[in-house]
Amino acid sequence: MIPFAAVMVPNDFNARFFDQFVDLLNQGGEGLGLQFVILKEDLQRVDPEWLAVRQYVTGELYGYVEDSGCCSTDLRTKARLIFRRPKQEVPAFRYEYPVRIFFEHDRSTIDAERSKVAEEIAVNLSSELLTVLGN
Image (tube, rainbow, N blue to C red):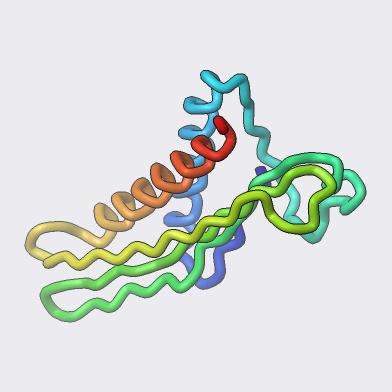
């Protein structure tokens, strides 16, 4: 597992998503005999020859926008997941997931809604990946 790239995404949102994503993968992977290990290096810093003989997961969070007015906020972002098998140029699985929520400030807070979105993305991406790995 290589940490996701996150361009112009709040650090706490990215960290919350990635922690939940890895936890869900490890929980779901137990039944499949899988364990996920996080590489601490960016993809550009990993030896390409070492990486070429391993299967790995990476992705990105992008298009993050919080459009707030006096009484409401529209929050949207996108996530992309890429799974590669050893010695294959083309990803074995590629998945994109857009999220958009709207909430009124008297009913919720931006922190609560960020948490919900991070969890929704983590649940969705982990479920899709575990389905692919289980087949």
